[in-house]
Length: 156
Image 1: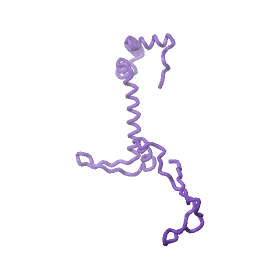
Image 2: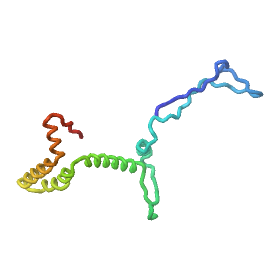
Image 3: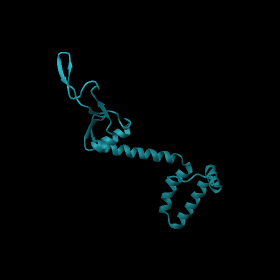
Image 4: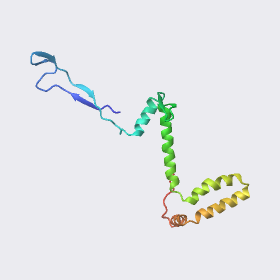
C-alpha cells in the first residue's frame, strides 16, 4: 500500500506556535501533521486478500469443523497455494475446452498408447490419429487459413 498522506493544518489567521483560546480554556495549536490516508491501492477481491494472507500470515493455522463434525486444520499458506493451483487448472480447462473433441481424444487416448507401442505400430497409430484429427471441418478450415496466410499465430 502506498503512503497517501492527508494534511491537518491550523487556519492562517492563527499562529501555529501560539496557544489558541477556546471559551474559558487554552489549548495549544499544532503544526501541520501528516496523517496516513486510508485509500487502498488494490481492490478488495479474493485474489489480493489470499495473496496477502498467504505471504504475510502463511504459517497462521486455520481450524474448522466439517459437516461430519471432524476437525480440519490448515494454514493461510496452504489455502493460497491451493487457490493458485485451482486458478491454473481452470485456465487449462478453458484452453482444452476450445480444442476439438477429436484432438482431446487423441491426446488422452492415443498418445499414451503411441508411447507404449513399438516404433512401427506407434508411427502407424500417430499417422492414423493425425488423419482423423485433420479430417474435421474445423481442422480443414484452420489448415486452409494457414496456407492462405490468414491464420492466427499459435499462442501458448
